[in-house]
Length: 422
Image 1 (cartoon, rainbow, N blue to C red):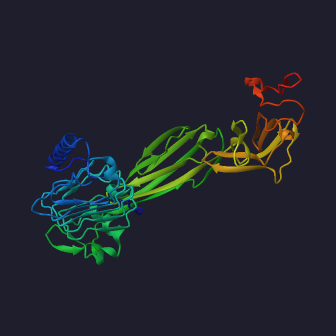
Image 2 (image 1 turned 135 degrees about the horizontal axis):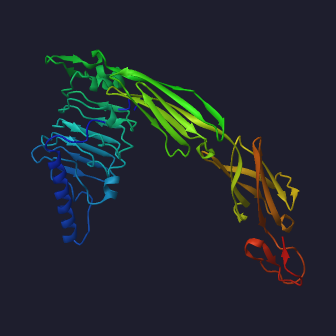
């Protein structure tokens, strides 16, 4: 959705519990049938008589043998395969509740039309992240909250033919649909019973929030303290919230009216590139402002592992540091000259770490030895070492693979010589 991000109360209206009970009793019936038939199912065996079910589509249009809720198929896998659900002419279909569509994870197109749909719960589409097309035309919806749709990316929504109230709660529909509201001839019902085009709806004290976050950028050393300020405006008075997923740094929040402060103390390098968001929302919609913490800190080599044969040989490593550290390799204390056959490559960058390899193309016994990685930036340096053995020295006699002796990195050549310790 857009900034309006199309949450009402989670308690459904009278009758919703009955539909949930219907689903449960239907499920018990389906399981009993499965047991009675040896547990073998054909897709569609669980379809109500008024519906038809195929590999990716469910259609329920028979009004004489109607349904009260979405069909529950015999397995989660079958429901995950469904991308289209079409329901029409169902006079007993009145609500979409929290768990009705939970297992339809790949649902893309949903139509519920010419039915008695009156209520859509706040969590109705919580598990339907792929939903793009929603047709709720010609039902009995008087209001619909933007919070139901805030996590979705719906590209097309049809709501015409519903007795929508000309209320602040429905203002987001006008703002989100724009000109499409007129294309659908979408109307709302005023207090006196008259109908007016939703595109012409204007209400006092009904304004989507605005939000301002200061400062716009935070670039500071590890261990510093920072204060972020967030201001908002809008009618009705918006609610302010900070979103800080898994933040390690100690933080305190202080809110007064339409201003809130976030105090971050002794910033941890583990929070480098963490996103902090100030969100302001009211019944009309939501706006938010975000920043990424840019925390400067010295290098830390978090992993340096034994050489592994890949397409080329690879000595894997992981390193953090901001700014990104310069990387240098030593072999037995001498600088490694990188080129076509020995080169450092970064393969993956996460929020705080760089993961890569020292690649060696067809290394020989001359490349055996102790490899030390030096990581340096303006705030410090870190180093780690590992012993790598690629090939036996071409000496006479019987040669076998080396045997490593734990943390001392001792290997024996099983030739006419003593063990060598690096």
